[in-house]
Image (cartoon, rainbow, N blue to C red; front, side, top):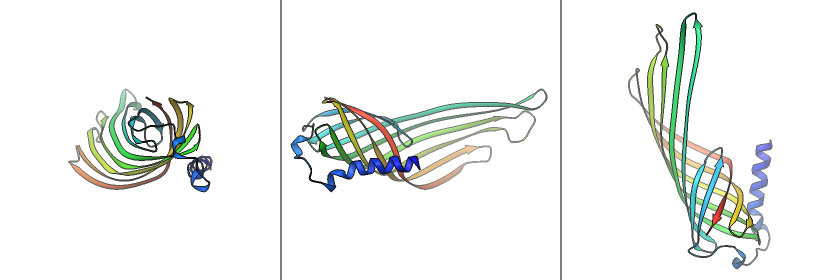
Length: 205
């Protein structure tokens, strides 16, 4: 319920300009040919990016993200015999999109973004089970491509520094090729995601 309330509040915040008379476009704190550095973190996407403004209310956005983790677990179900499982994951993703801004007041802007996304990932699992069937290693390499959209807002702490957040929805297709003791596998998957909330900010030049 808290997640739903937070998403609803952010959504109302971003569409508020459409429900009332907006301030003139020249109140936006941007200019054509301006650049910005972005940082984002959330449940669906974390990374860094850049904005390039083609007009005070329009910009191209570029995002890059990297995720990685490694885990190792051990257990001793039989005296003097230790079972170990190790897993590792690394993933890269990129997004490019077109963003449209509206002025809410002199220090708050709302925006909408639509664009393309793509990613690559690799995950491996190794089971070390001495004397027991089921051990060995397996790996899966995947590729993803699709579309995404955002509704968000930014609050300007200073003319060159902002913080805020966005709600993201996406439609993507994924292909995964696996290798291991059971032989190669190939899988296709269509994914739909809606209501993912992330937060971040920007530094404007």
